[in-house]
Amino acid sequence: MLKRTLVGLIRSHEQTGDKAKDPLLKSHYYKMSKDKAWEEVVSTLKKMQGYKVLHEVESVGEIVVEKRTVSGRTMDITVSIISINPVLAAVDIYSASRGSFGDLGSNYRVILDIYRALDKKLAAYKAERQ
Image (cartoon, rainbow, N blue to C red; front, side):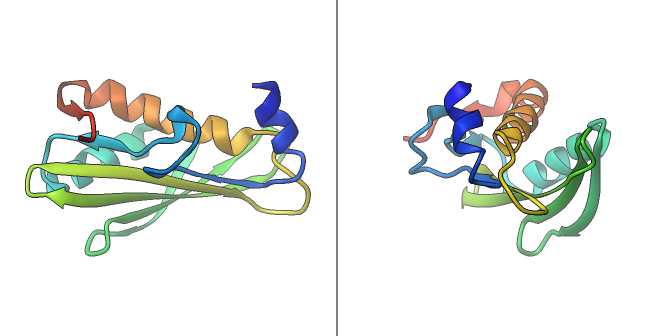
């Protein structure tokens, strides 16, 4: 966690993906169609306290969410749902803070928070990427 805070002094964004060095920032996979994953992710994000869904583009699989921090900064979060095959969907997250300076690791913590909520709700569908 200290490393994240130090990196956060200069960097004000974080993202997940298959090639992420940090295992906690790897893409999350669910055994369900993209449409079903879309419904579940959108409903989960709308219920999460402190997060505001601003924009949904189902055709591209992107949801734009905003979160305000206690210090008054605004974070823009893009959640992407990608269809790997008809019965497997991946969820990736990009989070960036508005303003100058770093985020002290808050984008990292937000991504983990969203993944935790999704994994809790979709535990029965969680899959590992082969």
